[in-house]
Length: 474
Image 1 (spheres, rainbow, N blue to C red):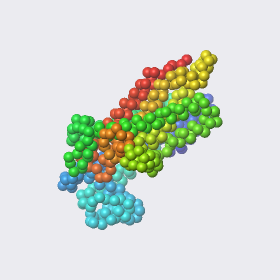
Image 2: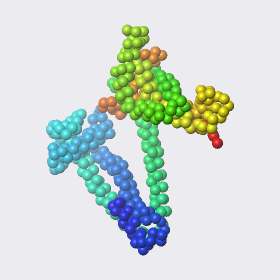
Image 3: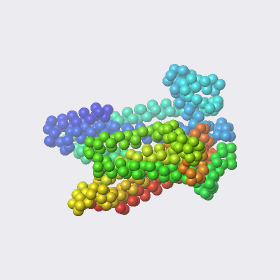
Image 4: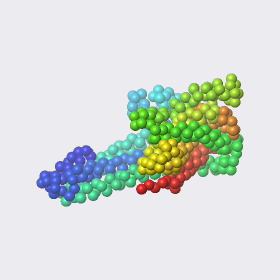
């Protein structure tokens, strides 16, 4: 409808001007764009709002009808609703694949065959489906289907209404350009707002679950205890300090690898390499940034770890007990961070004005002296910012440390010991059927919140350094 509206709006505007576009207030394309946007934007806005609101309304309606007796003692209402949605999705899948008819899905009884029926279409259920859950799932399907049909009707009606309204305003004197540009500005603001609101949603979700965790586990022990020993049977010790130490230790080793290599590579590419060499070398270095982190993790597990074990293990110096260690993860993570440091530093060094180089050469300085005394001091704030951004990337890495560093939460100065990090423990605490009413599962959100605050602080500090010490050149 929007595409058709663009053509018809443009043609109607020209017709109202007698075929002379000079009589029009705006270019003909603006009249077509006005009709297209009037048909498209309100309808898409309704779709977005509806897709967010419909699950909330349906969940609230169905969860209110589930009796308290249908919730097991070891479960919660949210987990029961998760089972309801899983059964409802399984019934939809069974109907779409022809395993069940639409009428059979509506009248299905909660006997022992329903798990087998849903398992045949790839939906695995952890327990038998009770009559209350099946009834709620069938109601969920009915309400979801009714909502989808209602959405379709309203979207078509709204698009058609916008189409007709915009066509009725399409005349030679109509200020189409002003309306279209205002509409585009609203869309741009909405796009920026989505990014901001997404960040806000992430922070709020972490905050609320972190508050729930600290209601069950004292914050003083979380931040000061030197022991990490979760136990889903009770009696857990959930001190974050061993995890923070492992995170920072691995990150420091990674930066000791990445910063010198990446910075030297950036200096070579920007100051010494010919355009032909730079055109080949820079993309090859940046390929490292595109390698999935799971591949780096496998490289650490299968190649770097055994290699270090041969040198520092029992057959060598005797410092290393297994291939998984802080040094293994740190070296591989450092390789992964090289393109971050190299590319950012290269761009920053290239931003130093050529006039400063020419002035240094004119005073008799050599190339190396110019780099040390002119270029690097001028680019230093940006390079420091690049290093801090790489550090925040290292702190948030997961797969490399899961496969390369081990799983032991300990405080040790030996880089050849196995340790673990905050991100690795977030994965382990939320793997499997986590009970979000227990501190052993909710601790993952407290760990995530702590990590978020640390990386946010590093990013803010990097921006502060760059802005405070940035050289201003004429």
